[in-house]
Length: 212
Image 1: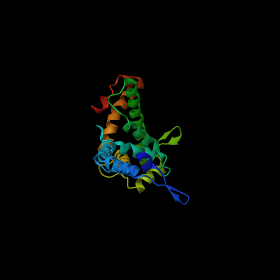
Image 2 (image 1 turned 120 degrees about the vertical axis):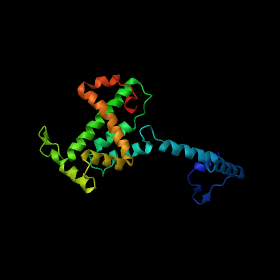
Image 3 (image 1 turned 90 degrees about the vertical axis):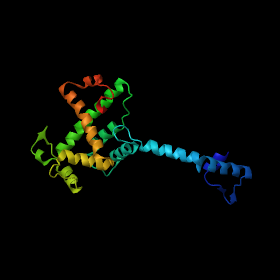
Image 4 (image 1 turned 45 degrees about the vertical axis):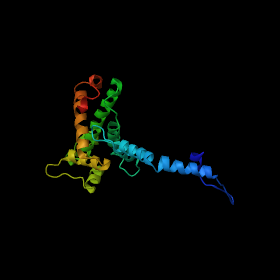
């Protein structure tokens, strides 16, 4: 009864106000001070915050994946960058290492896709690729390049286009760039394995291999 009263919307019907007995009011007070504005409520809040901000072994928390999802859904984000963020979301959202082999194979495949999209992004903003074409279409994307530059994502001494894309991802996901570097490096070994054979070999890779 007390919970129903506490959660109820509006207590007014026309010109008549609803009234509650002193016992019901006491129950509501007990509910508030024993369950909500209390140590129990504080512990629940602390638990939620810890779960949300808890980092996995790669330094990623729920906030990171939620930001990636928001970017993918955003109408203002350049759609050309969304496939890369979608790939990162899928990889960062992966729960490992205690997963069945089939699930591990799927997750390893996501990492391969991630590196493909990351490499494609690097190629598309690098002016050195202006004259390279694939299926009659230029690899270089001038508009996307200009967007990166206007946002301050440019090369400098000791900083190539790979670093630029890493900084762009890290900034948008609000994580340390080392998280992105580690994710890409972990994906690189699997990508090379696929390049030398096929994705079928990923079935042989242990779930926790890339994070050891």
